[in-house]
Length: 567
Ligand code: PEP
Ligand code: MG
Image (cartoon, rainbow, N blue to C red):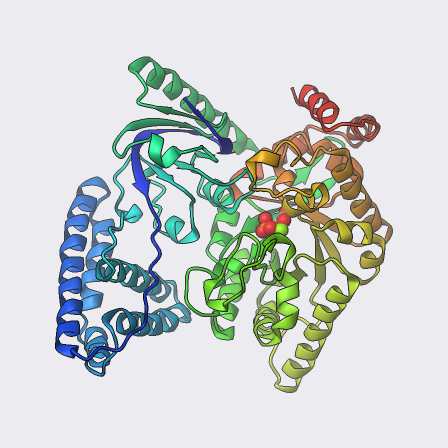
C-alpha cells in the first residue's frame, strides 16, 4: 500500500498508464542539405499518420466512432496541402524541420483559437496535438497519448500538467496518481475540477507502479493499492458505490438558494480555469464564478494570447454565466506557474519573487492588453476584476490607475465597457491581511486566497511535504488573519469572499459564517456539498463555535475540536 495526499474524492479502480512529459526543446539550426531535411520531415509525418490511425482504431473499439474521428481528423489536417506545403517551403529555404513545423502550427493555433466559435477553437487544440506528436517523432521521443487511453485507466505521472489534462477523457480515466503536489496544488485543483479520484505526492509512484498493473486509487483517504486481490477489489467497489450514493443524495441541494439554518443568504460561486469551465459552474449549480484563473489561458502555448483571444475568452465566460457574477483575476504567473516563453529568470525563491501583479506592473504592455480585454468583455456580463498577490496599497493603486487610463481610451474610441466595474484585491499575503483596514477603504471587494495566505503566513511552501504539518488553515495565526480581513471588509461595507480551497472545508464553514464571509468560491463539484454544509448552521451556533476556537492556542486543538463538531 502506498500513501499520499487525498486530493480528489472518490475511488478509482483500473490499470496503470505511466505518463512522462518530455521536453520538446531543440536547437534552431539552418540546414544545407534541404532535401534530406525534407525527407526527415516526410518520414516523421508518415510515422505520425500510421500511429494516429492505429490509435483511432483502438479508440473506436473503446470509446466509439466520434472519439476516433477526432484523431482521424489529425491525419487530414497534417495532410492539408496548404499546411504541409508551407512547412516544406520553409524547409526548402533552410529551416530545420522542427522549426518549420512549429512556426506554421503556431500560426494556425493562434488563428483558430482567436475565432468566435467553439468548433474552430477545438481545431487549435488539434493542431497543438499534431505539433507535439510530430515534434516528438522528430526528436526521437516516445510519447504516451493520454487522449487514447482506454476505459478504466489510472494515470500515473510525476506531475499533472495542464497540457496533460487537456487530453483527459473523463469517461476513460478513473484515477490520477502523481509524485508531487499537495491538496492545493494545481494538479489537485484540476483533478477535482474533472471529478477524477486523485492521490498526489505518492513517493516513487512512477517507479513503484508498472504499466498495465491493476491499481486502486482511494482519493478519500490518500491510499494507493497496487495489484489488489479479489477481496480488496470487492471492498473498494462497495466503498465506491457509497461515495456515489452520497453524491446522489446531495442533489436535493440543487436549484435552491444558499442559506444558513437561521436564514442568512450567501453567494456560492465556482473557481474556473478557462471559459468552458463556466459551463461546468452552471452544470454544478454555481451562482457565478468567484475566481477565473486567467493564467491557464497563457499556458501551454508559445506566446502571450492577444487582446482579441483574451476578450473572446472572457466574453464567452460572461455569456455562459448570463449576468451571474464573474470575478476575473489578472495574470498570476510565477511561483509554481511557469511560462517559459516570457523568458523569466530562474529565481532562488520563486514564490517570493517576480510574479503576479509585480510582474504585470513592470510589463505594462502585457498587463494593459489583459485589462483592455477584461474591460471590453465587461459589457457582456457582470464582470469584476481582481489583482493577485497584492502586498502593498501602491500595487493596488497602480493597477487601478491603469484601469482608469484604459477606461478613458476606450471611451474616446467609443468602445463599450462597464464604467462601474468593481476592482478587488485577492487577500493572499500576510502583508495584505495586516493592512486590510487600509485596503478596504479603496478596494470594492476582497477575496481571500487561503492557498497562498496559509503559505505566506506560515512561511511554508504549499507543495512541500516536509512542512505540510504547518500548512493548515486552522493555525491560530491564519484564523486571526482571516477574521481580521473579514472584519475590515464588513466595517467598510465591502463584500468579502473566499476563493482558496479552505472555502469548501466543512470544518471551516461555521467559522466563516461567524466571521461574516459573504461569498464562497469553490471547485464546481463541491458546490452542493458546501451548500449543504452551510445549511446546517445557525448564526448563533456558528458564533459559539468561533468563540471557542478563537481562544485556542494550537492548530491541533482547533482541528480536533472542529472534527468533533462536524461529526
Ligand atoms: C489562493 O491562493 O488561495 C488562490 C485561490 O489562488 P491560486 O491557488 O491560484 O494561487
Ligand atoms: Mg494564490
